Figure 1 (cartoon, one colour):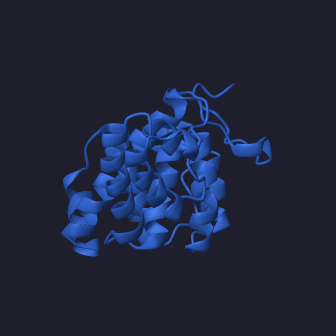
Figure 2: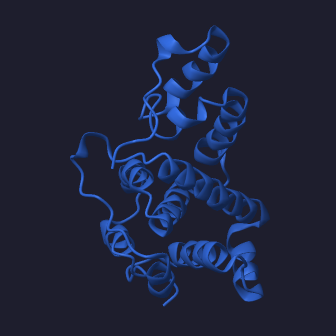
Amino acid sequence: MPERLTQIAYSDLPPEVRPLADDILKVSSAALGGPYNALLRSPDMARRCFDLLDYLRFKTSVNKRLNEFAILIQARIANAQYEWWAHETIARRAGLSDAVMADLRECRRPGAMQDDERLVYDFCVQLTLNHQVPDALWQEAVTSMGEQAVIDLTVLSGTYVMVAMLLNATQVGIPGGGAEPLPVFDPVEIRRRLLA
């Protein structure tokens, strides 16, 4: 399926947008590709999104391994090929096990999760698929992680739903086609499998 937007070249950006592109290029493994190719079509929004993403990726109060796990959960729920591809390697470097990622990739509740990963999984899946978090789960998350981390995790989850929507709407696929695509599941099947 072809991407819906042509790739923006740095040289084609207006001079007033280039400082934002410079900031993106400092942190993005995709250069101006991935979600940034779409976001740069709305430069004011792109700046605000970049600043939020910069906080959520690099300055959050959530542990890096758990942060990347939460992003992969959103990618799996959304069948977001690029989002999964971009964050799987980062999650591995942050210490998320291949066994956990393999189960999640196949849309199964991971069997080898650590306690903190189980908490993040339950929190993110409940929040995303049921649009709420049960009281007991909320309290467990606050007790274990602290209020700031729970709020950061909540905003991260919502933000990466937005990123997945942007990538899927513009049909951004895996660069070069070399990686194995994420299996695509129907939303009802995703819900059934991940809430099991």
